[in-house]
Amino acid sequence: MAFEGLADRLQSTIQKIRGRGKVTEQDVKEMTREVRLALLEADVNFKVVKQLINKIKERAIGQEVMESLTPGQQVIKVVQEELTQLMGGEQSKIATAERPPTVIMMVGLQGAGKTTTTGKLANHLRKKHNRNPLLVAADVYRPAAIDQLETLGKQLSLPVFSMGTEANPVDIANEAIKKAKEEHHDYVIIDTAGRLHVDEKLMDELTQIKTDVKPAEIFLVVDAMTGQDAVNVAESFDSQLDISGVVLTKLDGDTRGGAALSIRAVTGKPIKFVGMGERTDQLEAFHPERMASRILG
Ligand code: GDP
Image (tube, rainbow, N blue to C red; front, side, top):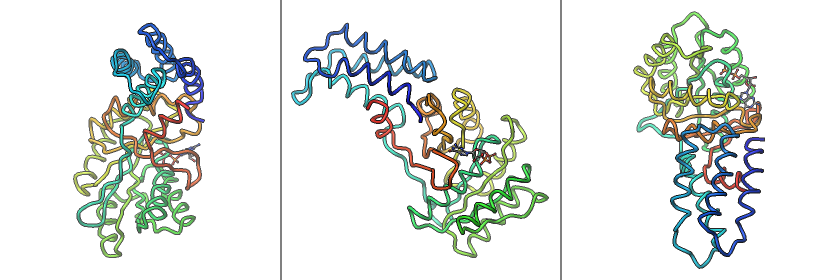
């Protein structure tokens, strides 16, 4: 489970301070030192850690005493609020286009979980928001991707638009939107091609699709297990495509959780969903506050 080590360490650190009737500057310094080490060990980006610790110190030392909380509890509240802020504060929603269909472009490197997440997201939109999405197989370079999406579509009883592997992804996207209008789909989710590394050809193609289909959302799918690499991938996709949000997959297998804690701070883009397993129902909306509470126990 994600954040296991971090949660254990942070919880034992804050436990020490929780019941205190008096918290000295020295106590705060000791606590933040432990928090800092725990975050670094969880593979959180070091710049992000530094900023977070400075903020916690600034607020925890010399804050107004509130009557309802013990000084120990107040310090913990600061840590919790800052962690929540770090992960993006409020939960962010999926955008809706002024005129349907709302187009969502799914982008990411091969193996990140893009195709799986496309199916999961369609399932989520239908089940939780009563939407009628059309899935689009535009990953023509990994032949198995089209079959995979079609299989997911069958499993979920959702339509999949494909034109095989010979067609141009930009044409596929444009045709799919025409079809969505004709058949009154309110959402179109495009599974675009990925590559093993970020490269110019990939970005050019994605930029072209973006220009043509004017998506309401561009979701970057990144693998949480890749830690700081996930943060770097997010930075480069964002600089080229101006993504609107991140889906962090395989959080079920990432015990450290460093990427989840760094991505928002480094890119400024919110984590919208997290993948918690291979099944189509294992996608969760990302709630910064709940996540911070889970970490701090
Ligand atoms: P793509 O190349 O980006 O389209 O990647 P795929 O969708 O084919 O996913 C690659 C592998 O990751 C597959 O075996 C998926 O079942 C697996 N996967 C995707 N999301 C998750 C997740 O949230 N948790 C786990 N454990 N596995 C996932």
